[in-house]
Image (cartoon, rainbow, N blue to C red; front, side, top):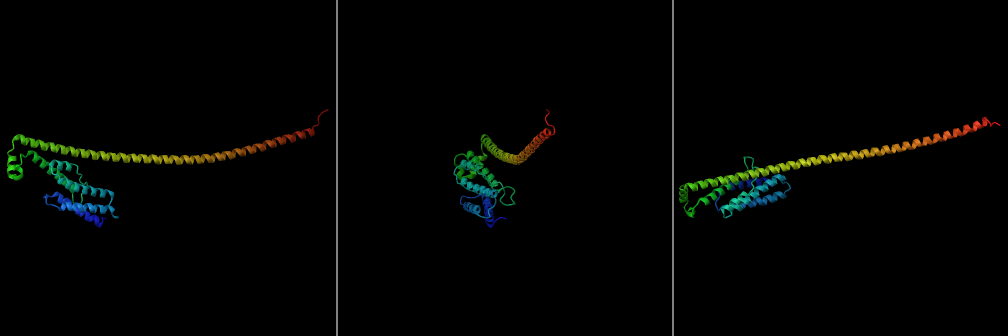
Length: 257
């Protein structure tokens, strides 16, 4: 069960994600303060005795880093720099609350990239500085754009969409590569583990065979000594019997004259 600190952290994180998904003005200060408080709560949560699992902490860190990077990207002056900074942001992979179909940080990331793309397109299509003080005039000018410029805008949208698709495909390929690498590593670990078990069994069997061989060698040595003793005694008896028989023969049959 989640601790009180983790519950408060999740609530504040969900609130930050909601604010980040909304359109904010330049005077909006809550998100910056909330993210700073989130960072402090995350450090406290990592040091807590009732901290969640390492995977959950990694996901929390990923989301907090995403929000911090989002704030840093919004402070950049150039639209191109903002778009480039947003490309390197990594949103969360799991929903913060249970009723989310898709992680809120991923939704915010998509909205931010779309806004940066739209701003870049507006910069490319705008002429002069008339758009700064007269948005209605700029809108009328865009409606009256020549066919070549409209085609250029369409081509720009197609190029941006193509790059976006390439990045998504590259991310999927990297994810699949990491998954395959993990599976291969686990398979190699299992093979090495099985080989170690087989080697351990072979060593135990070799030790057992050596003990049996040693026992049989001792028994054979004892048997050999016992056989030698019986043969020695048999030879002594045979020699003694032969000697006594010769004595008796000489006594019973004296030498002829």
